[in-house]
Amino acid sequence: MRLMLLALLLAGPSASAEPYHLIPGRVPLDWQGPDGNTVILDAPRGLIVFDTGRSPMHAQAILDYAKSRHRPIAAIVNSHWHLDHTTGNYDLRQVYPKAAVYASTAIEGALVGFLNKGREQGDKMLADPNVSEGQKAQLIRGRYRVDHPDTLRPTRPIVRSGRMTIAGRTLDVHLAKFAATEGDVWVYDPKSRTLIVGDLVVGLVPFMDTACPEGWAKALDEVAAAPFTTLIPGHGGPMSRADYLAWRKAFNDFIDCGHSAADKKQCVNGWEHDAGKFVDPEHRNYVRGAADYYLTTRLRSSPDEQQRYCKKLKSS
Ligand SMILES: [Zn+2]
Image 1: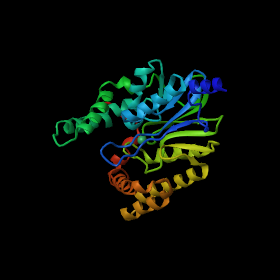
Image 2 (image 1 turned 90 degrees about the vertical axis):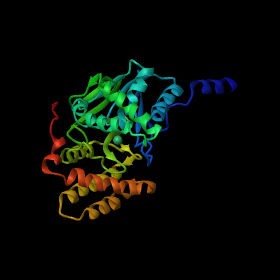
Image 3 (image 1 turned 180 degrees about the vertical axis):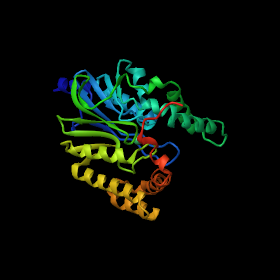
Image 4 (image 1 turned 60 degrees about the vertical axis):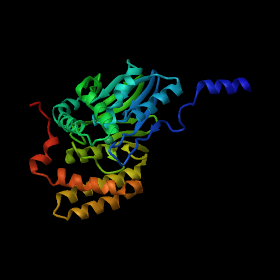
């Protein structure tokens, strides 16, 4: 009996009761910005980590889990390049340098566009004495990634959809072009009927900073066609199929409202009502503010601006 207990202790915690292990991304309401969700699957050659978060605490939680399981991180899959999903790649690969990184090549367009612009803004904030030391540390952490793009680039670029073997485990890997980013990766695990979709689905509000709404809506239709029972979004809790279909309707209605002549407030109220069940009450004001921001900056901006992320970004 004692021996059995010892064996259990040595083995550490076993795999979750769920067919995956979820490390939920935090959504702090200050300058920190959110961490994306991390989903971990067991594979014959080690752990597969979907998205790696932004904060050092999030990366540490992933490393702690791998350690507790006595299994190496064999592969990282990035749903998209946004830094709240990729900053931890480098932390993980410091410990597991052999971990392969699967992602689309959309990072290349981001480096010349969005991330480059973000770096300029970050530099201004670093020079500002009113910005807190904590925020500066986060800016420096992000800037290091942008200045060393190999910390963000895939080692195994995903250029098309198809069945793939990652770390010895078979998964259906999908590439959605021009959706939340220029290339979003989402994965279906046929064994557990689980979908891991990154920010194609967000429990808060669709993060549209680098989005092509039409491509995104198309990707959501493809997601609906997968025979899943559980879907894990980029932020927020796991969803059933019914939850997902309700979320997709809320997304489509929000886009339609944004493109109509309706009062902006009506669109924000619509999102709050339709997606309310996915939003933590403490995030309600944040969600209203973000919905209003995306209406102004994306859905009701100039026609050129609206189409900016619907085509390949070129270096200039
Ligand atoms: Zn995100």
